[in-house]
Length: 127
View 1: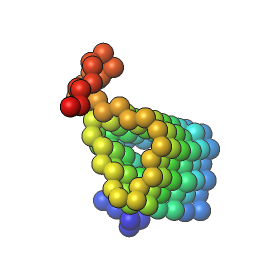
View 2: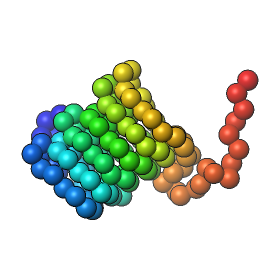
View 3: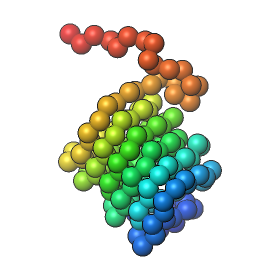
View 4: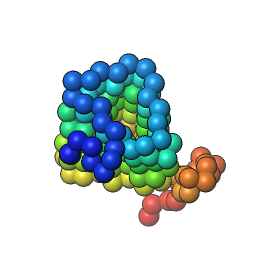
């Protein structure tokens, strides 16, 4: 991950934030964040050196480091090789690479951007 990749804001390795992080641009976290991260229409990347304990809401979330907390994405969540996610996940799409660690519940929501809940729809039966 290159710092400032595609014009994204960066929270560096030595930075620690406790509280709320809100924004409308892409964000790369390489440091420590505790609290909440809300990026409504943007991409959040949890870098390899990051340790995040926060509930996260963004368009897309890419986890390369460690994230503890619930994740809500209107688009895609990617768990990259060597990443760790502990918490419940709600997204339209999910990608988990080999050797990624995930512990929690997954709720894949169709048309998440339109706010249509999946909770009222029965899950298709596996045969």
